[in-house]
Length: 212
Length: 133
Image 1 (cartoon, one colour):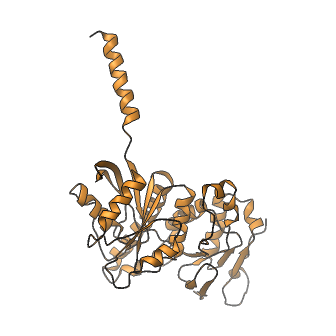
Image 2 (cartoon, one colour):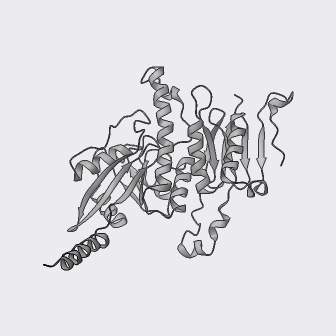
Image 3 (cartoon, one colour):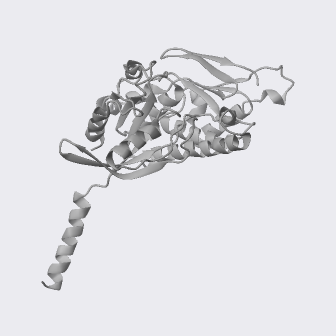
């Protein structure tokens, strides 16, 4: 094979890769603190890669850094959808270290609150710059009409990002999926319990449909 | 442009200062000027009411700057309330092209997190309890 033919084949292969292999979409998992975002991220990652993403806790702001799990391949109906999952810190407009002092000493509580504020700012930055779609996780046992939820959904909509709302914690007695559907009727709401693994087939069907 | 006065500047009675800021006053300001004006007021313990609220991008930056300014025992952040979107809002592509988003500006209340507590909120009513520090 001549040098010219080899060069032509090489350019052709590079061009094919450039246009046929789509970069995995980065899907940000957003929501208020303690909605179960990391539990969901871990459930998805464990189901499809065998690894977890991060630690889970009942104490708010356990996740204080955005964490990305790359190349999560989800198979649906014989097709494979590849996404990067970005588990983000819970978004809030206030952080009071005294919220944490029941679970740790004051010094650790202050450190946790400082890290939490940095984490929220980081989550907002990812939302403006670096995600291609959003899974918005809500605790279905809580009232969804809060300012943080209203603002974040508005920010996501203003950026024209595809969004799925996950009504999590359906295993709790006070869970109401309808309350979430009524609060955000413009978006698809999928009920689930990430902790118990309930309704994960519908979760994956929707992820593949919305972000594939 | 005159600044909103601070109650601490004068021998004002012990109370909560409320600044109602018109859409006209906000219209000529850059994003960071708006955020600075809001947070300076909130740091002083004032309740800031915006006639026309903020854009989603401005809200996102307000959250970021607020987080950077939180300090233990001094400033815990903000409470912010705006009416949620109406279910009947036209969010279709045609609606956006026709500019229906322009009518989304909504009255917004912002205050120090340790002084304002939302009691009730729905699409047409915000009820909040404001306390002195």
